[in-house]
Image 1: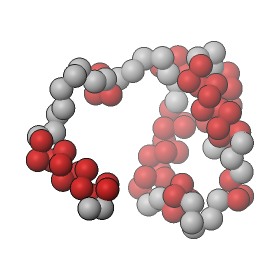
Image 2: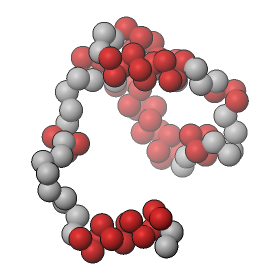
Image 3: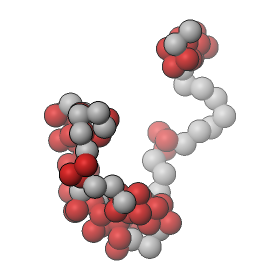
Image 4: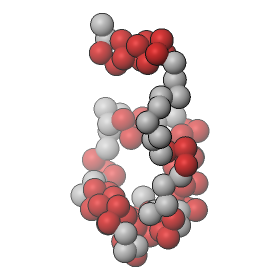
Length: 90
């Protein structure tokens, strides 16, 4: 966590600064099993550690193509309805 905070703090991008402020206000010692971030599977935790170790603040302003929205849904209408039902638990 400290590694990521250090890298974010050095960045001049607004997104990095906002992420830094959020992380800086979070106390790792206060995380418990009830906190989602404290109970993630080991594989996910390792990926997060890998991300923080390889984080490049210059890339923060570049939005990956797969995260852009072109106005059309990739999922079928049936998948969207099923996901909505699961989220709303109806």
